[in-house]
Image (cartoon, rainbow, N blue to C red; front, side, top):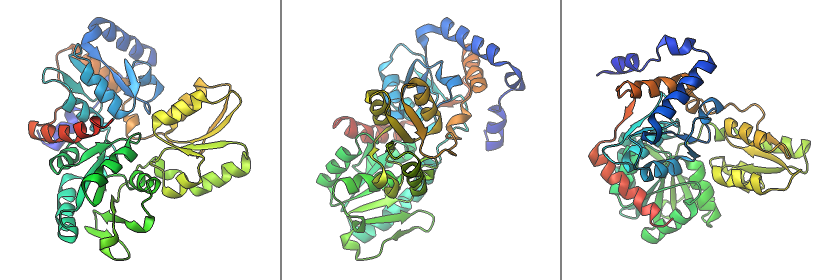
Length: 366
């Protein structure tokens, strides 16, 4: 099937666009009740509330993939997240289980900033520059192909929660690391571990060259020039505005934000870290949160006893994540009910084998 056929086949039928919210919700509830434990709907924190309400489990991408792996009763896993998350779930689940993504257009701009062709081309050049002194690490927010590349070359995946532990492990294996695909998480993590900014280089996949001023032998960390389109929109100006307007407000951000923003914030950590920090804070405390807007709005609703705002008041939700909406979810569920494997996510055996190596090296240290 060519790209045009794929897009046409996966175009949401008009009838779902015309259904009322009430009818869509009723259909979703009916199918969930009918299928019972045969159906499992993991839902990422950044999803819209209209989808989030039907989640069987919520969390970050790796946690949801692991929960999918543990759930042997589910025949059908409808992953409400983005493409790389569904890939990871497919890698970790059994051959008998089927993983679906309600809308195949739900990608991740960060993951798309490192494709396998670019990575293999970069690896060859870096090997010529530095020899066999580099260990690759990839953020779990990457494609299955990149995870497989890392696994095949002795490296591992990392999450925003365990990045420091994994970078420390990597430095025990090799003199240098290549960190894909998010330069900000890589830079913030390495800096926290004592690596100087002057010891970090950036690999530009579009120019196919290493960006570094100085002697190459001083490089310890090679950062892939990628970023999260949401978290990069939190700026130093935003921090200054909050400091001016709310002097007693704490600022907490995700480590996918730039080094400058993380340095100015009071706290920085993973999505789960942010959620727990707010939950454990005292009533009346004030917070500015630097992460995805759907999650920030949900946190605000859950904590009416606290003053909570977005660090960037003009921030939009993650656009690709938001492609998973209620009409697409219901269409996916009804297609499964009718025996159609629409929007099925399948990772080939070779890719899965090497990607599992990268995941298992991380999980063994977690």
